[in-house]
Length: 408
Image 1 (cartoon, rainbow, N blue to C red):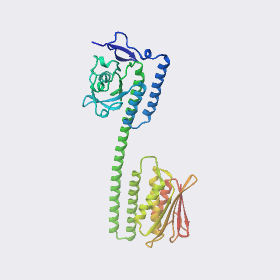
Image 2: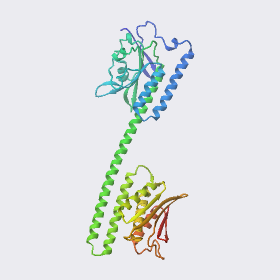
Image 3: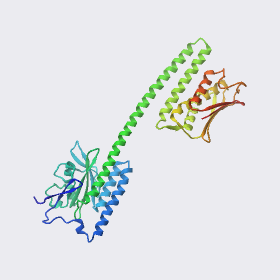
Image 4: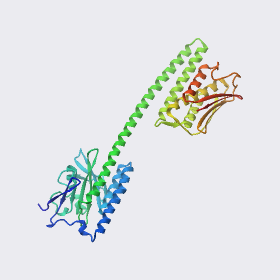
């Protein structure tokens, strides 16, 4: 055999180094420089490149961009002209170039290498041991790939990339210049490979989380769809019962109940579409309610003015139903079928939110209170209950027209 394998130890891992055809020990990089200062500068360059890449690995959300940054950092830190990252493909049983520095066009994403023990990259992948090949022109321990011969590669260094406790691929640096890679260079290159592995682990975890969230969203959407359909069926049953009722009062009550069931279904549908956190924008929610209710009440004009503010999702449904009930109450009792203007305002007064619904209709009776309204006892009871559910207080203000102000 022309060369011999020299087994070194670095952090417990075997390092395979080809000594080539030189009868003496391989010349180290330290012997090639004139003083220790040059060696120190070289190692500091590697540390800087490793540190910079480490920050990218912790922050990047794009694996392709990260791999490109890794091969650039590898070539820069090793003062080499060529570097590449090879990913193992189980189905094909080979290593494909996923990122590269210095290679001709058509290599990245296309070129493949054998993953067997006869190639430096394959040996590093199969055994997990770093490989240094400093004399590829006289190499007999490994087979030199044609692509590397085409680019005039004289020496190569390979380390394993792992993720999720398994093998992912190989990080390799190649050089067409004279000189030798050292076992000490492995600390830098393995550090890069470790950062790549961490980024891959994080990406896999984020992908799984994203899939879980998408699945959860699908389940919520399906559940919301079924709830809305069930409420729509209930509303239809109430409407049918109202039509067959012999009492006008009973028919009106059943009709009002049907409308309220539809309001609940509409609010439920709106909230699941806006779901995604502990709070939602109350201003946008109130504006949406005004537009939806206004489209159904064609005899009134709703003037809606809101300020953007967050509200706990748990209270959002009650607020949406409260706004719906107050607008419907004004449309029914202030104007009858004649129609008119209803103003809805949502503002912030210090730490307190204030909701006002005002009309220009017939106004309130002199002895009116929220609890003794005989004209629509169910409606006022709902308004009072919904206000209490958001820890709010409501007051009625008479003439001209009527104003209901909720502070919460």
